[in-house]
Image 1: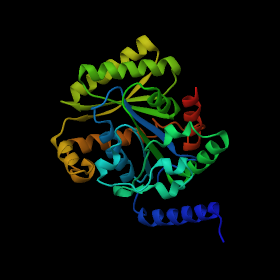
Image 2 (image 1 turned 180 degrees about the horizontal axis):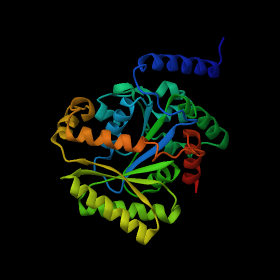
Image 3 (image 1 turned 180 degrees about the vertical axis):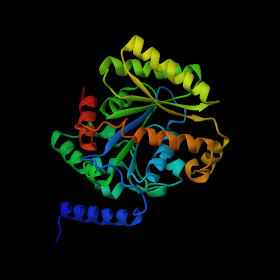
Image 4 (image 1 turned 30 degrees about the horizontal axis):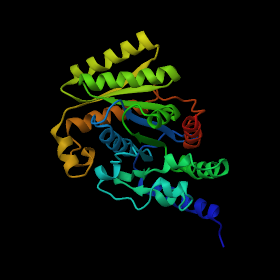
Amino acid sequence: MMDQAEKLRQVIEELKAKQLGSRMAMPEPPVKRSARVLTVTSGKGGVGKTNVTVNLAIALSEQGYRVVILDADFGLANIDVLFGIVPQHTLLDVVRNRKNILEILTDGPRNTRFISGGSGVEDLLKLDRQQIARFIDNMALLDKLADIIIVDTGAGLSDNVMSFIMAADEVLLVTTPEPTSITDAYALIKMVSNRDRTKRIRLVVNRAENSMEANDVLNKLVLVADRFLGLKLEPAGYIINDDAVTRAVKQQQPFMILYPRSQAARNVKEMSAKLMSTENADETQQNYGIRAFFNRLVGFMKT
């Protein structure tokens, strides 16, 4: 009779074979030792952070990357809403050792997968050292199943959100051209700079009226962060205000799927290509991977 570890290995091999068969026509992603962990966040709510996450995941998957989304917005988890899919299990089931990571992965559109966080990460603090180690060993299986893990955090400057930001390999910070959104984005950047000025932060301007407005916001934030905080920000792209986005949300579908030729979809495709380009990728990857991410996360949350 197979033990649980052997069953997990068998399932992984079956998943790999299935994915290989379905992606023969897709370009091969770069060989990576561990998954790349990208945290998507914002200084305030209502800027379209989760919509950016979902549609970026679709765009990356269409490039041939294996993408898993971790919904870590505990207060307003919306990944399942935007996908129109209700997950049967959450990360809490893994934390409490009721399920393994493979059993809580939910299939999304276009070969994406997602994990509903629930209150799982908060409950990590209630575990002892041995239980945490077992949980992280379980989560580390994602490094074999994913090329990119996108963590959708809550909005704002809470301790939990900052822990996710500081634990990530890199951060995608979403703002809009509204003055309050820019101010809150800068406040978040300032908090990060006080902890780690080497943290890789990339900026996305959502709902811009045009490219000129978007680039103006990007350039101003880059300049101010460099001059006053000593932090080098990187523009990742922008999304022009598009009615297709609103229509897609109402239908609980990503606009990348419903309206692939829309302005917003073209912007996200450009953003995904830029994020994964060789010149922008960190080839060392010595700290990459979901195991390293959760080890850092637990450390930050316990301090």
